[in-house]
Length: 315
Image 1 (cartoon, rainbow, N blue to C red):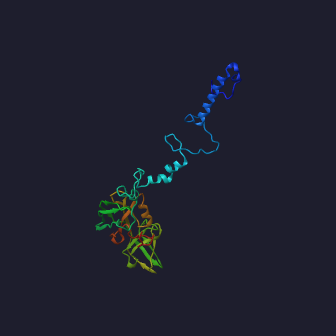
Image 2: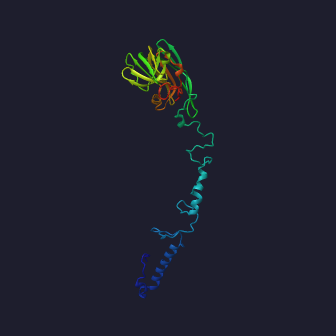
């Protein structure tokens, strides 16, 4: 007899239909079904989803097979943060394969690639002092072989470099005089200088006019002014010389020393223009028409000779 009906058909109770045998069979199947869903006949098989209506599922046993459900206690003991933390420690033999153990000298980074890409700030051992020799109408500059050190302490041997640099142009002074703190001069031909650039005054009588100064104003084509505390004074003769400023730089992971210039003056703006995209100044050379100026040249932290900031300041 089928087990699916949920009712007792009337013929079951008809004696002519053999009520005792049929009813007994139906009751037997009903008992088996109840026992099966009660778990007496082995694991309970569900043919649909189990809904507890918000009630808890309690007293779950310890899991045996991979498909067994687990209790919150088993999950806490095996998979919680506190349970997994010891396995993730750098000293654990089961630590993450991609993680370096900081307390293991065999796995410790000997140098950081990030720091290798950072330059060391000057002044420091990375200042390279150029060797300057005046030779006729040129200036010989030698950058000696040097050891360059990055921020992480790693070093590279820089290749030496020799250059023959030309003397910059000079312009004859037509008139020159001082009033208060301002010196005004005119040249016989246009100099092309502009405010903010540096120029060297040489050969003027009296000699108190001579020196390297930052141009404060320029009225094309001939008039220039600069500041000086000479008071009221008139001079004669002499020349305006434009400084030839050259910067020697190095770049990340490159043993070659690079040359940039000439610039009309050594200013913060010019240095910022040179220090770009991984370059760093390691030497500065200043040349006037009379030759290389050793006192104005030097390592990467040599003094600025222009008007911004004031001459003699370090940058």
